[in-house]
Length: 492
Ligand code: AHR
Image (tube, rainbow, N blue to C red):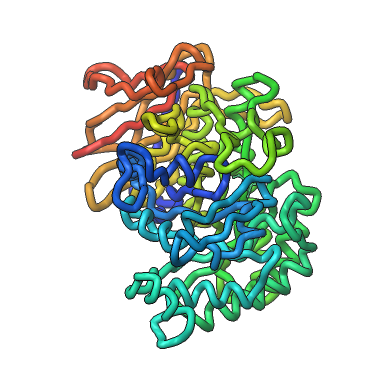
């Protein structure tokens, strides 16, 4: 089939905030222990961090990592994870019914983050705790004064403040699975008061208030309105979370979920603006899509496995090729909504619903979703352009028109390069792509992720789903294989 895209380099949506390529590490399953931290591993550095994992994370070029949860944060005492490791308490983690040894806490995590070149997006516990513990935590992390918590950090060996700039006010407080979940009114109040004390300790930070944990929550919309009514003047972003799955084994419909994500973003942005108008405010609340991914095979596992294990293998979703296609589409959605989405976190990064997997005493490897994430982060920088797409479409199960070609175009002024991300959602036919508005630019690179088998996976010994560098043939039209993810770069 044929498709045509038309751009105008001056017609931009907005500049991309690099933080949309963020990720997430929670104290959950084998993400921290056996994932980033394994002092007995042959590749461990002097702090116990796996160097092979550090290298893979660096390859992804992750600008921010959300930490320490997730559901975990709502029962977490941050003080358990600082100072002398031999004195740290072992505790029950009620979010995942596991045993937390606290051998990694903020002291270690900030070291790890600087080793991989990422900033931390720190979440505070607004479940079992509140403003008091949050203000102590930020003083510990960012304090420059001669005061108790700043001095405690110095005593623990960290003279320089961690200087964490981005903070989440709790996690998914609308969900009854959350430890001490709250009504929107209750959450709105505590989030406001916590926001005030955090910014009083450090006025240079930015804050994210919890939006709904899923667009299908019965309170979606109302939750956002009530929370923003309370917090509007005190916070900078509203969070969004969403995971998709293909339980019905209908690939065409699964790939259409990128449009659901798009509608979810636009609806949430509209609600933010509705409150802006109501408050007659000149401030815009933008969006932090701080949990997104494919996740359906390994849901609710914590309820069925043996309780109180240290680092049990939880949520180890094995991603196949079609999952990589949807992840690629979701990244396109984020890029095309860069005027409102300023932060986003692929949930998560290692072992737990993750692009990187590790084996205890063994290697580390890339899941299928690694590649669209890596290349979006490496090449998807600059301004997203409005892209006009002419292509045929199919119907989703809800009756939406789903164009076969899903695409974003990004102009990188610094490199004078135009980058097109394109997913061919036609499961039977290649697309012959015509381009318009690229005058003076020539196709320089065509990287493709393709497998004949939509269920193909990678494992530790065999990377079956990987990138192909397609040969550039100036004389023929650009070919996008049936069900493929592609990145095209154009240079002068
Ligand atoms: O990312 C896994 C879990 O999904 C997080 O802990 C929680 O916030 C969400 O429900």
